[in-house]
Length: 306
Image (cartoon, rainbow, N blue to C red; front, side, top):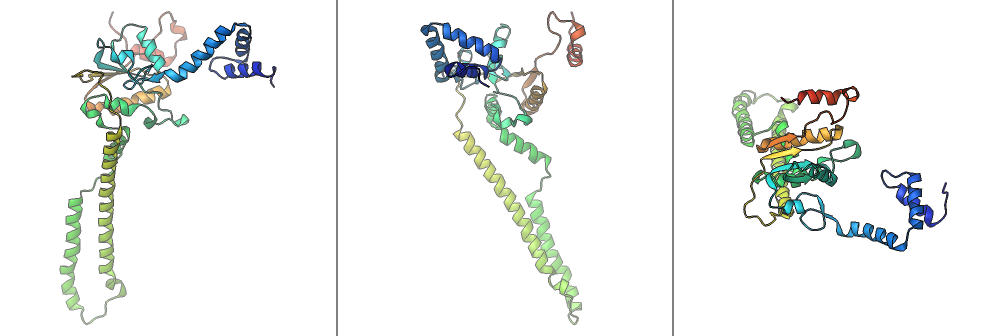
């Protein structure tokens, strides 16, 4: 039930719909804005409009910026051989505040979450593959198709052709003596339809092979067309960009983040690039008594000599 009428309740509902703001907090903000001067409220409204109108995502890494390339990607002092993969643009700022990382970033825009219907194709994984040198021409769909094709049994069309040719020619030579011996006898109706059945099976096998080859060719043409239509990653004016040597996966240590980390590590392993992840352990100033088992286990596994 609405406690206020008109504009006040509309402002309360608008602010309470934001994350981290409850009904009481939204009410305090509404009455504060009601007592503020017009210049302050106009500036707030203009800032919100400019946020949607001016802010965009970097064409290279996916970070927030107001130009096609963010300041981090355009900085020639950054190390392009090290790439840190994060979930959201706010994670870039968290790592930047440490002043310990001097490489480049890649924002996925989320994590794999089947419950929320977020698939690998919904993330910026294809853009990540394009940044990893000449092998980055693969897309997520092509990688998944290659994995499924490797898991399924493969049939060599040449072997099938040779076996099928033998199966078509050999029965004719073997049947001729039998037909000569049994020329005076009436063959059963099932034997009369046997050559027709063999021919139908033959055509069925060849049709399956032709259909498989046609579908593979269509997939290759579609992948080539997708790559040609995809916008290339800008090289920000550098004549020779060194290849990426290490990819640091810096995702949240929850179930979705762990699943995405495992998926990315398996996807990048064939590229010959070093894949690392952030260490997990005890936070500074915490007590062992309140640490969970998973955090303690990872802290023990990642211990270092002092």
